[in-house]
Length: 493
Image 1 (tube, rainbow, N blue to C red):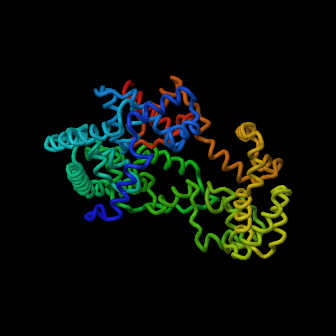
Image 2 (image 1 turned 45 degrees about the horizontal axis):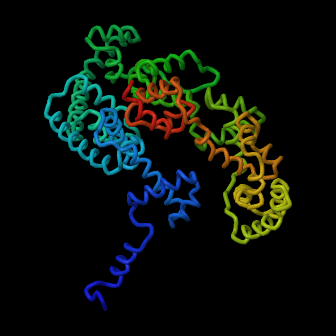
């Protein structure tokens, strides 16, 4: 053996390294491919044959060559700002290199590491400084807008330029201070409220606030005296929208989203039971808890001949009749999902595969449903539609049609089911077609109005950017376009 100290695997690996045509891209390879592109255009099949590589690799070599033509060594202020935005949003070095356009990925990686180290040092230095009122206000805002109740102290620390531990400790002290102040006020406010109620059978919150030197909202949140509070149980005959609107307006003025509602304050303001206020707020939002008693009431009233609109009014002032209708039919006819058997699936496939090339899908679907009378309808419809959308015969029909014209018809309001029936294909295929074209149909060029709208929406959104919701606000661009545009021009505004 020529190499006794080497294993067979290491020898084979070294041979592949020197003989493979797909080894590392050299400058010579890039120049050769660029010359062929200038001669043949972007005919990657032909270029791949000339260079003895795959068409995809030839395209990648040319793209790398084009990028290297634009590479610069020095970092401008705009490029550094774009890179900082990439670090903040968790974008990797490869994507950052594509966004910047004038730096290779390894250069972006090195600069990212340098910026991160500098940011940690700055955060450590700032964490040792005193908190000012602006920092405290931003800290409270970021914590209050945290989603799902889970507070990401690392992200908040990056926003404030401090360590996560410093932010956590500061907020804990603020929370404890607020709790202690509220506990101190509670007994004083409750005594004053009880005194006023016993004298006048009502509470003047403006007077209570003046007497104690607090705000009305602080008094409403601190009071624990509940004597004489009325019950507020929904009754369709006595329900008053004036009272409901008064409560809704109080919540809107004092606890705008995403601030959580303090129902103690709501209960004191309305002078009604706290649990009743919570339940009434849910009813006003159209939320109904379908308990056994509520379901029994719906069935009993409907069986007695009452209309669904009247039944809905008996349950809530805002619940829709269609929702009550669906609940009633579900209760009267409970539907238990039963998946199709493997034998049934194979039988359906045999029927569809042998007839799809000469039958329209609507007729074929009806034939399958008629031949399977005992199968679960919901599972049967789902399987027939999905298998029909995968059949080559129907794919060929869609391919031979004018796809652009079909898409424009759907966008102008024509129902997909109507077009699918005319073409003899499953409507699911048109649904998938429109879903795949959603992002590609956006224009690549940006107008000044679109850019201004993007900057306005992006800067108004709290916390990390949600590019999907931002693109929906802009309306004419997809999330990836919005993100790239903001990183490229956001620093100029």
